[in-house]
Length: 487
Length: 96
Image 1 (tube, rainbow over the protein chains, first blue to last red):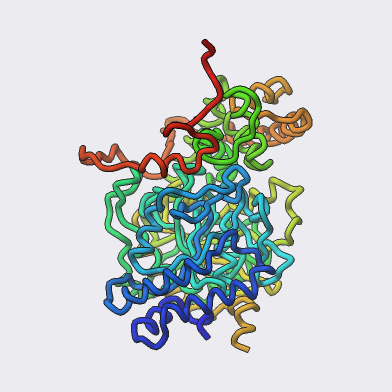
Image 2: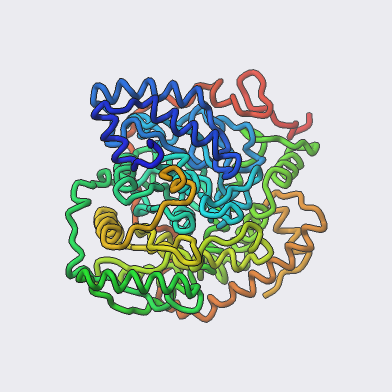
């Protein structure tokens, strides 16, 4: 069955001419048709275009001119610009917006021969941790459709977990790839800041945003990361570095590997069931020769607060571009300023308006030093604490999310609890570090994620360690929606 | 620190958001609760620590000074709510 195959295995079957790109695309369109009314992963699917792309891609496969995943279809978070395909950021203000150009990652996917299945649901402008702030629809978790897939890249995570796409892309500003990956039981990777171009990614918080892959295996995530990474002259913050090299992915051994365990991320903020699963994994890895070092990184406990100053501050500036003049839905108010004020008040949802307000306030005269400036100093302190530990260990290991998937609506009345969901993931964004979430078993029948974070530019090493850890741990089952296919 | 209704309205003006009065009221409560949490940063010792506004230290990346084509005009205008004669259309700003 095609939906059960990993992307790497699909690519092999395609290269060996055992299946065609059209068959793969049809199988996934069929899954979307069958299951998306229940999961709500997709905001847009253009079946005709998917079929046409698959047909064109077959030539690349036949001529061997595609990438390592040629013929494997992919779903994209709806904040990644796709020429000719509506891109809304799950916001009313961008309803009907059709990008006139492709994001760099989209160009690279096309060049590599990966058909684009459609655009996935998300928290509006990626502001949220549950995909519930989408202006258009709810996305449910393939493990339990009463539960949230996490967020903000909830649609991308759920589509891979439910077998509606073999791989997908999301964006991660404070954990928006890794946290939903953890809650949906799939792999989610945030590369080093600047390793993947942000050109064409609708900006939320530019100093933190990074595009990265969702997949069902570390190998698939690594192959996709290799496809989309590497310097891009169109992004001024793109690192002058080569694409992520995955040739050594399977050559790592766990013997003698050192992981730091920050006590702050194994404390009261973490659910008991998650801690138990992590501790069980640590025992298994110890048996493989991994050395664990319990360390303290006191500043990571300020990560959430730091994030809720820096990210809204950057967002308030980035979202100033939505003025109802060049694109987006215009609400007329009389004059130019009135148009501006009405368009934004009606076009942005409540969470986005609130964050713009927080950011504008934090940057305003008289408060800048107390909030933004201090947050950027705490950011430095947090990065230095992580870097100090990384001198002595290969990587940091901790939970990805403090809890398992929660019920939809359960945390909506508790904004602080929702924000705390990012406590383990924020440090990687603050320091620009690569970090990956790998499934490590179940708690209460729901997936738990283990996070591995390495130093800047250590993407290859983080992927290699994650692959070795994935192989060493018992295989976490696929979501019931995929297990059902096997049965 | 706490934020007054007047300040909420002022910040909304700066942010170009035409908020309903009911939202101004609930935002005041919400922002004050958040500012309470923000105050925990005051207890962090940041003496001698440089502020960091970006994820990685990168100095200016220069592009070659080569001309290249931008978006064709009709494509650039294709999403505009209102356009005319190849230009974005906005309400009159300067009266004659």
